[in-house]
Amino acid sequence: MTEDSKKNYRRHGSRYRARRRAADILYEAENRDVDPVQLVAERIELARDRDNAVAPVAEYTRAIVSGVADELDTIDEKIERFLSTDWELHRIPAVDRAILRVSTWELLFNPDIPTATAVVEGVELASEYSHDAAPPYVHAVLDDIAQSRSESSPLDVAGDADADEVADAGAEAADTAESEAAGHAPQD
Image (cartoon, rainbow, N blue to C red; front, top):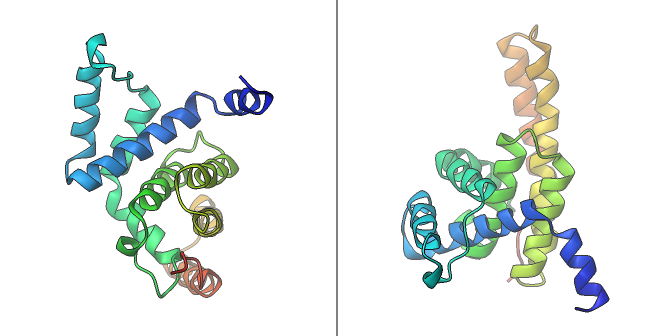
């Protein structure tokens, strides 16, 4: 094992591997047009027999896949909101969609994962699995999602803001985010 591979091995812990496996499963499920939760169940069953040579599915992988499946519409809407106006989610590579979905789920629905970790790990997955143009736009989209989440948090926590103030602030944040997000998509 080389020194670089030792360094990468230490750097990529069990959560990174769970994210990678979740992205793989989401990618496969989309390409096969099957339910990703059912695909996880199949993998769990196959892993019980050592002759199948299927690795066990980590609990965190299950949580991600289940979470993405449960919140897919919300996740996809959030991703599309921050893609360039010239791009739609179905036009980006499937592997990038899977990675963005994993990281967006972590940003929006898993408060145990630090924002920076969700963004950096998503970019790392894009660097590992996608084309050279993917990491910059994956980073831009995830960063915008993270910022939009943190921009809305003070109003959510305040509790004393009325519905009109929340709606006005949300609309203003959306306008700002859309103008900043122009160009956040892969180039042809």
